Amino acid sequence: MRKYSTSTIVGTVSNLFKRSVPTKDGGQTQAIDMTVALHSLVNGRSVPAYIQVTAIGKQVEFLLENDRLKEDVNVLVGGELKQERWVKDDRKMSRLVIKASRLEIVDATLARTTPDSKDRTHVAQGLNCTTIAGNLTAAPEMRKTPSGDSVANFTVALNHKYTGGDGKEVEETTFMEVVAWRSLAEDAFKSLKKGSAVTVNGALVTAGWTDKDGNKRQSLQLEAMHIFGIEVPDAPVTQEAQPDITEADLPPVEAVDTEDLPF
Image (cartoon, rainbow, N blue to C red; front, side):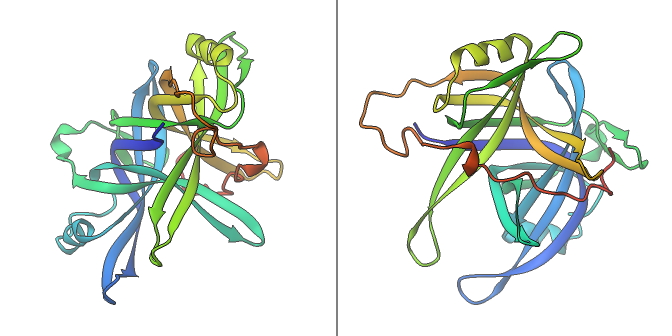
């Protein structure tokens, strides 16, 4: 089974950072890191999302040179989910980002907006669509909310292979946390197990909480709207076909400073 992720979102730019990166020919090109904020209708309710996006190349240079890409501008972003990893104070950190292959400015006259808690406006009915295909790292866990709704959580591993600058093949794994509700949660809990091959379609949502030290934390989840099991033909078991992933392999959630986020 081919593993992949594809995301398309429409939202409002915030926290835009510009940087220069070297090119293979020894030159420089422009790259950006930004947060795209939006509200979207997910499973019958309006849900906020604050999604990290990285983009690089001529399209970025054109938008920056013409002063079209800046904070508070509405954008359409299309790309692939990637997990960035680094070490801070001897602690392993990670975050999920969309690595943009498409970046366009959206006509503001056609975009409905809403204010956040800091009176900044962002897209109120944004496009928020992500599809992933991969394998479960463990069987789903299910619980009941105080109102009696079923909620299931599981993690899907997505393997990425590419050729590095030295010509060698590199393999990376992105872990996507998925949440499902009600009958979809119950079906996932009954049918899926560790290693199950699935395709999940849904929306990216920001989950926030307070840790034991009183610090605000956040993570990006995929709230499922559709879950499909994928039949894998009988074949000798390989790491690609059936990855042996344990909870110990999962990277810790990024310790994000969320002071500037409008929760």
